[in-house]
Amino acid sequence: MNRKDFIKISSILGLSSTSIPNAIFGGDSEDREFYASKNNGIFNPDLYRIRQLSTAIPGELPKQINVLKVADALRKASIVLKGGDPHRIITLARTAYQIQYPKGSIMLDSGMDLETHREFTGEDKYFYNDNFQEVNKALLKANMIIFSHYHADHVAGVVRSPHFDTLAPKTWASKSTADMMYLSPHKPSVNISQENVNKFIIGDFANYYPLAPGIVAFKAPGHTPDSKMFYLRLQNGKEFIHSIDSGWTMENIRNHQLKNAPWVIENADQLIAQYDWLNRLMESEKNITILCSHDNEQYEEFRRKKILGSSFV
Figure 1 (cartoon, one colour):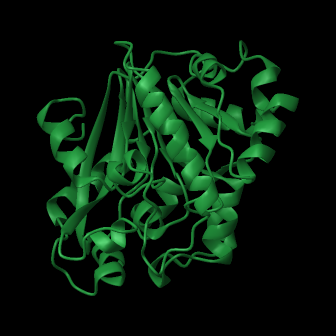
Figure 2 (tube, rainbow, N blue to C red; figure 1 turned 90 degrees about the horizontal axis):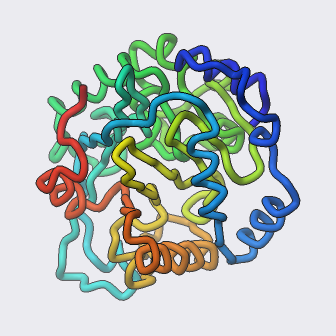
Figure 3 (tube, rainbow, N blue to C red; figure 1 turned 90 degrees about the vertical axis):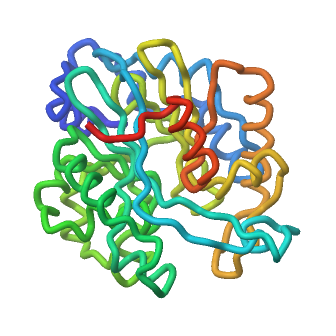
């Protein structure tokens, strides 16, 4: 993370950059080894360092994580899971997450509009406009918006917003995500010019990127070349790893089952390595909860149990 980008983010969040050590803005040799290894199908992020970086940016930690889905996609299990039952239907939720602070909020991904939903499903069914409007309000209120990767169901809420010029200057994208958004847009609905992409906060980094108090991005290519996971730490001490789309469901992760959708091109070795790491984490780090963007069963369970908030503020 370079200092110029950090100062821009700091001004959005009302933070001070004077006490941030230069060391957090770049990667050391250990980071470069982790990144090179990861590209060869080894995935072993340094959780100790990630935890350190979660408090590198001064300020109050988040109070809560909230989630809303704007749509569902119903897929055969044989599409979601390699070797899955073709007679079983799995519901995949299209979600956006709000990280709630005492004096503000950050959005993790932005959902998608009806037109983008149609491009995924070919129909209007299972699009939840009331929730989409709540996501739109939350995007406008947010201090910052984070893109996890370039796929349309994660970026369309900003890209297609009538308030794009308001949202773009507070939207963070990694350089690889920014490049892919205009060079190879995921869907026609999210076609965007380089000029508009350049309105985002674009951050280049080696492996770990402290974005705000309690939020650290780390690279996790596999689902897409620009994919990231996120470490989230709350005031109450609870910790989360958001795996985004490494698996579409926790079944993918727990059972080491890759996706089987013919339209999805992924790096199998990288994803299996991520599943290995996430399973080791679930076994050894009982305080950490793994989140999965599209797992509808998790969405319903975690909202019901109040692990995640069920409305945006």
